[in-house]
Length: 125
Image 1 (cartoon, one colour):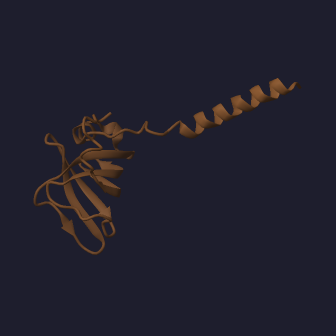
Image 2 (image 1 turned 90 degrees about the vertical axis):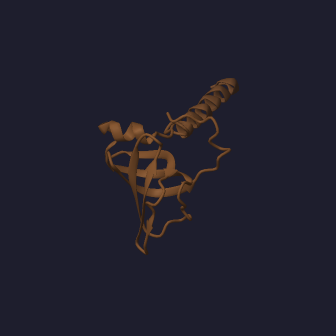
Image 3 (image 1 turned 180 degrees about the vertical axis):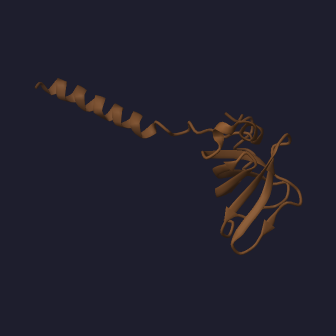
């Protein structure tokens, strides 16, 4: 095999590996609460939701944190087992990552405070 052929095969392998590694990056997207509460296809699936913590709904104890997340059109109950990693406040924008248990409840694995500048102009996919 010629040196040139080996180089071409090497480059193709590297490109192929990069494609495989980057396949799922950025394709998950953020969903609206209205979208997941109205479509049963999301039940049992991992989702990432962007919304606002509804006023007066935060309940925190040693083993669980719960609140209602809203997008202004629809609401969903968020349950996080364990002590929340962030200080959640009423009216705060958050990203919730977890499993949609029903069209009214998500079991969160992660709660992230939204950085307003990061999501300016971002549309749920």
